[in-house]
Image (cartoon, rainbow, N blue to C red; front, side, top):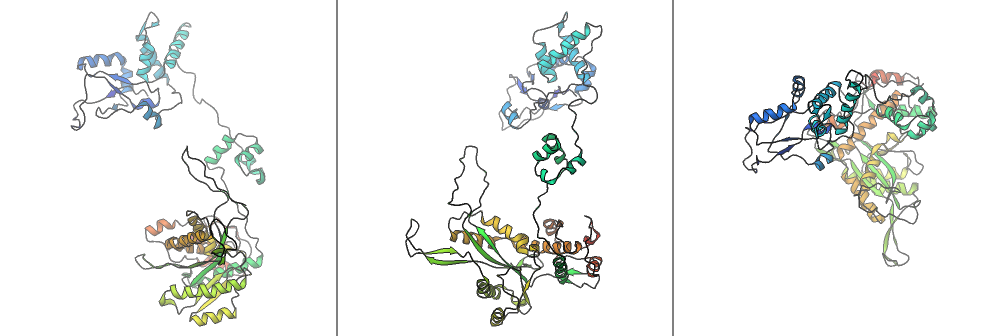
Length: 539
């Protein structure tokens, strides 16, 4: 379609605050068609001519009824009060295209008619190519090519200026046999380059299938190897968290009385860091004595489920505490940073059962007594931990005496072995804290401790509540897969449910799922993506 008529109304009222337009000057008006042609292809309007002169100048360009009808399909409205953009602005905004415009046969015929009108005895007048190129927003080379083709074809008795690109034209796409791709060993499908070498195809062809969704990227972590006994214990653990299993409405407990504890190493910096810099900014210099021995500190974290009232106001954050394994030691010799004898913070690199029991008794229990809601201190509080050898035994006598001394009702429970996803700290809390503390630069152990504690305190309780719901989703998947760990956690879109105030406190399980896992058959089960056992758990 040819876009060449620019219609504007000079009777429109202008802005009085702006400078009036000088009608004795020519206004250079860019049109939308500049996207397809050159930046220099613009119509020049003379505002000094009258109505008759304007019609005469218009008739010089429009010489065929068919051309008029073609131009009237798309009229460009021009605002004379608006400053036209410069060529630099058009280049920066990406309004130009380097791809050559493909003219239709009708457009080529109209161009030929325009050239014939400007020719004398088969020769074009001077400037005719430039004039027609500006009229149709194509390059002068295209005009010359059409004129040359018309002259050559006229020598054979008939003028033929139609293009040779009939029906489907252009480069044909290379189709990849996806069955052959699936036969390539996984060890050779670790990257696009490796996959293309194995199949003897180009990278662009394979990447095109990746963009269209026919090929997907998979990040595949190594998971713990589970025995049949491990799977059975995991299913039994998940069933113990469900209330009203025999009824028609089985659902998980609210988990308000469970405190998850675990240890984690936090490093003072990462081995490889990513930054965003200005084009002329120098790369940051990061150096240390050994990349294999970065400064690190182990922390003991204790986290419970946060609580909210009916108006979604926080009544209990669930942040019991985070306790670093550090000690204060006097400096043995003087240095640039401190003199000999000054107390400096050192990380405890070896944590045994005695030290774990000491932190649990002298740090975790007093913090629970201080922060736990007063109305729920009579209920049984369960501390859930993993099966590490350094952890306190659930029947530890010294711990039981300390609990009675504080006047609490606390018991220890170990989660199933070889499975960290049943602890909310490993499920998502540790990764979030690690990402937050790295935003504060640390040079010494004290800075690292302050940064980690700050990240622990500022982490939103709303997100902590989501991790507990994700834990319940993991338990549903564990029961569906009969204790296996080769499942994917389905997305709930919790953020949208929170905005609609429809986020549930507990997820529901279908009675059919409970019946399947309690009938004694612990064999493998093939589960489809749209399993009926997931329906209704948000109601």
